[in-house]
Image (spheres, rainbow, N blue to C red):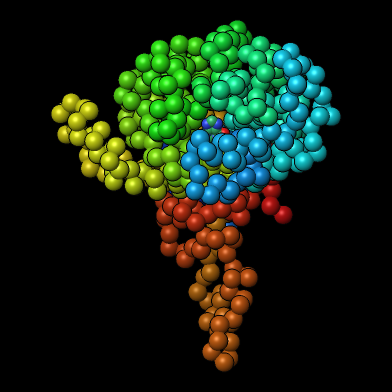
Length: 505
Ligand code: GUN
Ligand code: FE
């Protein structure tokens, strides 16, 4: 396919899927909802407007795909990717997570001193980690990410600057955690006031860095209710609402059963975990709730009523043994869902891996006690009979949809990113799968040496990455192979807002 992208706005001006004889691929894209055209429509190129042409070659097994949106990732935890042992959420936070995050700056010694943090308080190693995580997520096709940083203002600002320079679309959150009963002595905001003033500092920095929020925006980030005092939660809700438009908000909810039990102890006055956020005006249409593994029906109804969004983090939920989120139920109930890597609860910075794990987790969900109980008696008989057996399973196309269109809706950017329509922003990846080895082009004699032993030339000269094609796959099948065995080696180039921000040499 050939595309024209406006050099000024970075938006799609027109396309010609027929140019490379790859109508079949775009019929596939149209069938699953990434484009809503018949694949033959050219846009209005608008005379004098500067456009650049980008091209995917079907004869090289290339195709464009919307950039991935990671709706939940902890940038400072990247050094811990893959390190979690057999821990579960609450001991994992204490053992692995708070220590790594605490190294991103210095903690003020007295309340009111959070303003004293200086850029030079950020260790070189912290900047290195942030540069690494942005490089790595871009190389996996993540064009937009909602990041949790740490409590440190200078390092958080540095993360925003790195995303801005490297050209990754990002929401940047300074983590708020001021509850001394839960947070460790060595890593916490010293008061609710400090938490708010430090948050304001970061918001102001990002608004100066990118005044129109073209690429980078601040996001209000109470870590999760157990780490926050009631006054901090109240003020953060007010702070988000005080901007026009209101700021985005991100936090965690109902990830783990012990966490849910702890919430009951910490907030005995509230009806539920979700109700705690609601009471503090933190459940809004611009709120991203990570995990949502163990929500009650009442909580789901509340999330839906407030139009808050859910970030599904299946790799993390399996790694930390948190459980399996009932994604199909959420979608059926009209809740907006996207995917998150949750690095480093999640071991991988790849949203393709998250899509794969979403498929796998959904196939195990029907075997869990909670799910069986829920679907046997918590709904009316009419619903139960309508719920077809196996309906909880997500298809490859559906999990990719969550990774793109779903994520875009989670960050309220569904009109701009996540799909390919004229006028949408060119946030995209060029995928290449393994080359097809035509019979005749590699006669058996060249891959089996004269003594009958195998030659090593087949793998060396052949496929791109880990996906082998045999020449007879439909596009539907090629995309399935991509999800099940693809990785960053298949990502040839990545664009954000029409700018190429990553390519494989
Ligand atoms: N809950 C509170 N903090 C965290 C975190 O850093 N990661 C995950 N997965 N859950 C959390
Ligand atoms: Fe998380």
